[in-house]
Image 1 (cartoon, rainbow, N blue to C red):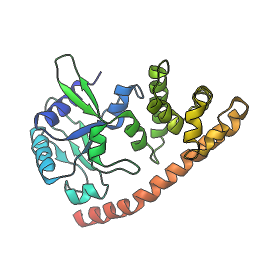
Image 2: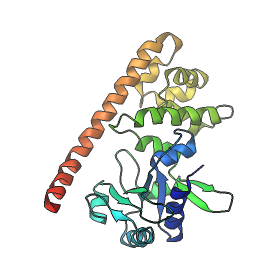
Image 3: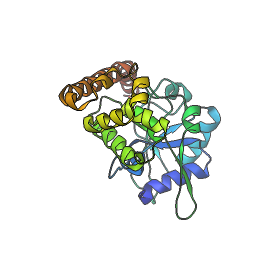
Length: 248
């Protein structure tokens, strides 16, 4: 399922005992929300010891920094992504992006506690961001992320709808982007819908007679999230531009 260059990066991260979780497109591939991803996106624990372990792993991968900012706790803790390109013969040209903090996403220790652990056929273990946290991390201003969120939730729903527990139902009611499926969940689980309604008022429209208005409300919800993400990134983008000018 995971291409061998990405497996090389993940196994190197694991072998160097870096506390990191796979996220981004490749995690979406695992959960059924995407078909292919060229990059490796990681969220890491931002501590001096863990960053040192990451630096050793990147050295092993012959990874070069390809953009500002540099790898440091200071920039990671402010929400920046740090970008590298692997030159290792087993992962040539593979991009590795590292973050420690994301808008709307819990701190790393909580993400680590909720992580999904995958064991492949040879017994190797890989750690992924939980699907609930991956959905939150994907709520960005980028066009490509919103169809992926929808596919992630649809895949999770169809995999679990025959015997869902309360946390899964709550997750669907809070995050589902497909109007017809959101109506189905709301109608099948009215008590949990009532509990979630104060946090997501558009659930009041989750009925067959309101399919059009519900679709419009979901579009407005997406617009608000995109706007929040643009607002979050604006000062970070300005800082990156200052760093680029300093480098030049």
